[in-house]
Image (cartoon, rainbow, N blue to C red; front, top):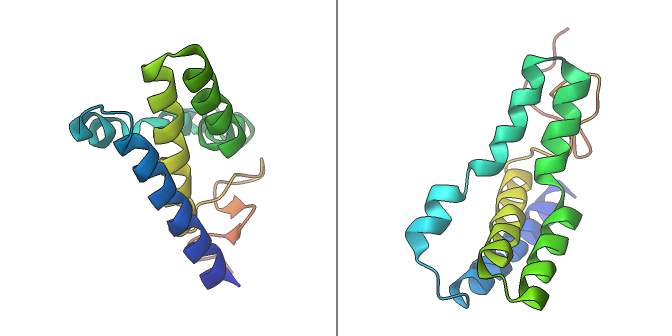
Length: 119
């Protein structure tokens, strides 16, 4: 099942790449901002609950789609690009097994546990 999810996420990453290509914006901008959503990890400096909230806020595909659509409907190209990049980043993270976080610990995601579990 995990392999099927990774294939699906790869398809969504390709969709986002195609959408970004249609914006006409330079690819260096895509590359430069691709890891920007990981700023949500800073919440873990406070505690696991705050970290989960900030991480999930910056990695939620629903928020990415809303930004993408809001940018398209309002003609705000950079908002559209931000939504696309957020969507692409979230898909890439899920290919790697990093899902939305639960508040108990970083390794507990909606896709299961990541990394090695302590015995």
